[in-house]
Length: 629
Image (cartoon, rainbow, N blue to C red):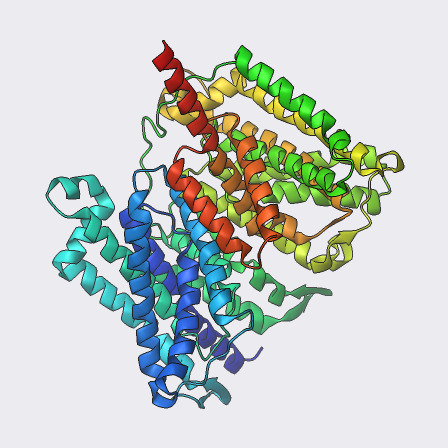
């Protein structure tokens, strides 16, 4: 790449940074004031692009292109205000993770609404009137529209700075970011302040999407793709820092542009494909920044709280009622193949439910008692699955040995990643787990010679004596029950109680001699081990494995399972996993718009059971016992 090519790639990075900054700035504003990790923010970006496409056609085309962009941004902002008033305002007092679950359900609803209205086809907009040609820069052609995008980023940054520092509304927003309870105590109407901030954040995301109309087609995959990049920018720049978000957007966009420009480079006889790094460049940057500066480039260190989690009742051993109920459930599971002999699919679904229960229980182990929120737990599920497949296919190990050796591969990954992750907390810890998961996913997706690349690995079948589906079901049942009971037993051991003490009050735990970070690291390894076991069972049940098994979507599914069942109950992850997986399977087979139906059901469950299904059942049982007493 010569000097002129280098300059053009830098300019491409600047143009790409503008839209990324707009989305990240809106997300940062919303989180700073409302404390909601808005998973639906990428959907606002997608809607902005779709709306701009439709408005351009409805207005008559031509120079109506420019009003269409502005109207699309305003429409998305109005939609964001409607979402805040009708949905989010009802769950502000719910635990933060349940707010995340509600916004994830909203993603599903918006995606299928877009599918119904615009269809599944990609939609590429027209060239911008007046800026449809290119200009010559150092002998190379560069789109004139991209020059406009380069200007828009700093312009919006300046306008936001003026709005937040030179207006009374901006002062209230900054005050709410620091202490929203005090703002309410001073007589400020918090509800409308939150609505205004949410609308502004949604409008910025919609504008970021609309501006991409001539550059990329509108499609249904933009929501999750965009929200991942936006989270990275916000965390790298520093939570709540608008200038930090702009610097992070510039840094990430420039690195990706340069990777594309470099292509494949040979150094000392070895070829390096820098273009492949574009799939994971932002997550590599985030991992490095969080390890070196945990609070981001322009963020502020988080103060260590004396009580970082709400006080909960002590863990208690199962009473007689729970033991009898568990025994009855186990008997029913043992009889299931006999009772469903005429329906072979029942055993297939039951295996999926059991594997999901073990995966969710392993995630709950670090989220509940450990107090560590992970957005990348699918990495260990995938490592276990790939470990089993590679041991069988590449090293010719017996299936039985591979099944129980593969979790050690996942535990090794958790050993390495956990050492870095436990040094952080809160959102920063969660985002670092996401970064490591995306790095692992990128390796599996692109290493064609070893992992099969995007096609994955096939022919991962169980041993001959397990070829019968019912026999494999019984093996899965034994392994899953043993895994869940071992994790439960660990929570009642001194290790489990010490882990919970470190979650509830790290300062007090440290004062009495508990090494909190070492315990959390151990919790990470244990959780990774059992997630890998679930992954190995999954690989042999399906006969194949692909990178989707460790994608962001799989990690989100695990979060939904734990939150739906209830973080504060030991039965919660099992209940949530069975409920979510069964709903996903049943709804997907009943309608083409299964995401919207599933999202609506999840929203109803969140609003009806803010403590999770198992948490609600526990509260109901406790209230009845109290009334009878």
